Each structure stands twice: as C-alpha cells, then as structure tokens.
Image (cartoon, one colour):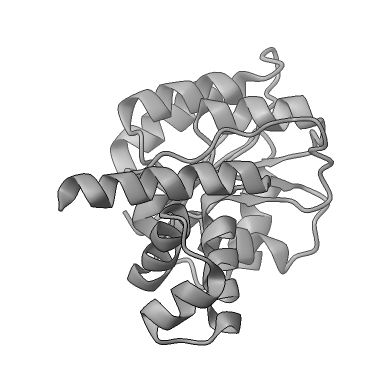
Amino acid sequence: MNSILVVDDHPIIAEACRIVLGDVENLVAARDVLAGYEAFLEHRPGVIILDLSFPGEALGGVDLLHRISADAPLARILVFSMHADANIVASAIKAGAIGYLLKDSSPDELPKAVRQVRLGHRYVDERINLHGVSLPVQTEASATGALTPRETQALGLLGAGQSYPAIAEELDITQRAVVRLIKQARAKLGIRRTSDLLRRARELARRKTNIH
C-alpha cells in the first residue's frame, strides 16, 4: 500500500518521478494499460500516477481509471498528463481520479500533488481553466472522511444555518479560525461554488441530526 505505481509509456517519466519523489522506496512502473492494471492488482499501490494517452489507445488511461475504480473505489489516482482540456480533466475525475497534474509542472508540484492525493484530497493543477465545467463533488467515503473533526463540526454548523460568529462561539474559537476551517474543508472536498459548499454542509447537518 505504500508503493507508487507509475503507468506511462515513456520510461523517462517513471525515472523522473523516482528522482523527483526521492523518498519513495518502492516505485513500480508499467508502460501500457494492461501492464498497469496487472501491476495494480499485484501491488495495490498507495498512489497511482497515470498518463491518459498510450500508443494505439488515444485515451486508454481513462479506461484504466474505470477498471481500477470499479475494483477499488477508494484508489488514490493522480493523472499526470499533457492534456489541459477542461472536458478531459472532468472525464478523468468522473472516472475516478482524485488529482490531475500537467506534465510541464515545476518539479516541486509532483510531490505536493502526491501527498494530497495520498490523503484523499482532490488536487487539480491551478493552471487548468475549469470555467464552465462542473467537477463531481467527491464521495462521502473518500472526501468527508478526510476532514478533521473540527472541519466537520464547522461545516455541519454552517449547514445547520449558523452564522460565522455563532459557529465561533459554539466551537470556542475566533471567527478567523472558522473562516480557515471552512476554507480548508472546501479545498479538501474539491468544491468551487459556494452553492455546492452550502449543499454539502446541509447534507452533513442532516446526517448529524438523523444520527442523534
């Protein structure tokens, strides 16, 4: 589970990942979709770094995304691709990817993306223009479970209709701390629109009410 699987038809990419990630002791490489799936089944890696394009299979990586996600819905998959088209990015996320990073990123971006994906947090290259494209909200199992108890509390209170000052008083923290907690929760859940954030907060508040 601590290994990293790199699925890319260019051997230099796997070697570059090994160099950039540095502290990864067990990095497994596969050069096509079939070998990638077999390596996934054998090693059950903690993180999968996946290209989308393979010779003879225009977007074969998306097919592999579907196969892995069907077998392991909580698999941590980071797409590492030159495709910056928002629709392709959305398709990859819908197929099961948690992160999406462009290959011309600076060397320090890959370790950052891997760390976030390993934790189950969505990570999308900030240079990708997602205007007009709606990404699916992460599932409760993969996303909400990654929130800290404090973030969950703050989000639940927001969904219950509490104002920021009221949340601050309830949690015995400052309003600035409340803003920070909500901002952190929003980033972890991969939510861009305020309306989606409020909807998720209300869902969380309803679940807490039903539990009690």
